[in-house]
Amino acid sequence: MILLSMLVPPVLACGGFAPQAGSLAASDAQQALFDLGAEHITVTYRAGYAGDAADFAWVLAVPGQVSLVAEGDAEQLDAIALASAPQVKVDHSESAPGCGCAGFASGGGGDFTNGSDVVVTSTGVAGDYTYTTLAASDADGLVDWLTEHGYDVSLIADAVAGYVADPLDYEFVAVQLRPDVPALTEGGSVLQPLAITYGAAADGALHAVFPAKLGRTSSVDAVRTEIFVLGSGTATLSGWDAIANPAETDGNIWDVVGPDYVDATGLYYDFLLEKGGIMRQMWLAYSGGYTTADGDRWLTRYDSIVYPDTNSVDPVFADSTTQEIASTVIYLMNETQYEEEYPSDTSLGLVGVLGTLVWRRRFAKRAPA
Image 1: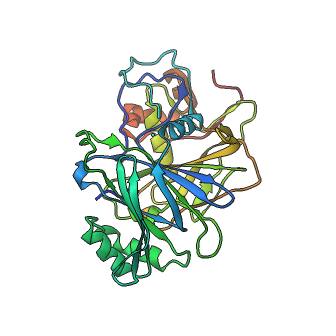
Image 2 (image 1 turned 90 degrees about the vertical axis):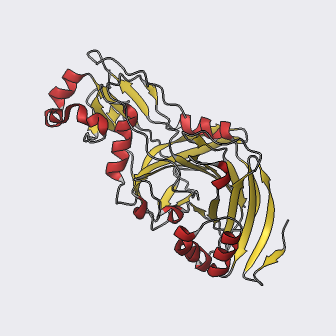
Image 3 (image 1 turned 60 degrees about the horizontal axis):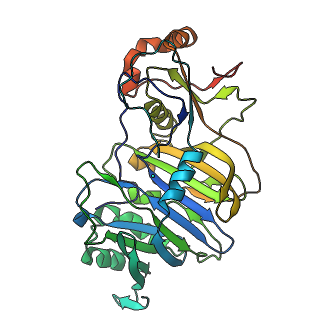
């Protein structure tokens, strides 16, 4: 069984890393892009999966009436992830040899069943997936339907019951890989994105909800999530706490700092885990203008890494009229400079590469070299 929030193990930083400046766009995370419209929302999901294609089953909870399930636009998602990615600034004049792992770029209605408790509202094919959309008024009936159709929902039965009982009147999208899709590689694979368009909920309003509660019983150590929101202004966050990204002044600020023998990917992972972990918090990684094929929009990105049990509340995103510029900068100093400016951290040495290096937010008096 594969669920939205139990898809990909965290990436491990490699030792002896000689970093390169540029964009840091992780592809080891579950991603969701919310495109906020006036009458509907389209959310595009993408995640990785390790296992046999025949065992793949995915259940999503949607806060509104589903009108379309389609293959998502992978190129658009890649472009948005790259445009909003943390930027790495490096001064490694005395750095150690590299390990060769630089460059991380990112990834028929009306069929009544179980009386009137579960309604199949549509079925179809979307890219590599077959899907069924469901409306349910009884949680036990929905669990029975999913189980009978090859979805082992034993671990998420409580979460499913919560969505069924929610006054927003959630619908559900049950997804499997098509039988003719080639088997996934032993090391895992990033799946094609899946796009779901839906309208207003039972209260008449649109809701951009990420169904994190479906991943609360995940067996992975930590869950990494990247949320992108296209709207008119910087997207707000409720349910979870948003960690404000400080405004840049003439480029003289960076958010994460470490020695240049540390992999920037691992350093950012540590940063997010420190701010997340057991706390329902998301880092405002990016906010800025973004041009789409349909015109100019505003792009907001939130990143988080939390332990599975932290996902007891769904994060909810909403548009705003405020446009706040924000970006994330990771600054890696040469070893000597780092030891001079952060002497308390030097005792950690290379242990930091393995994920225990303390992150610091650093306000610079000058721009990084």
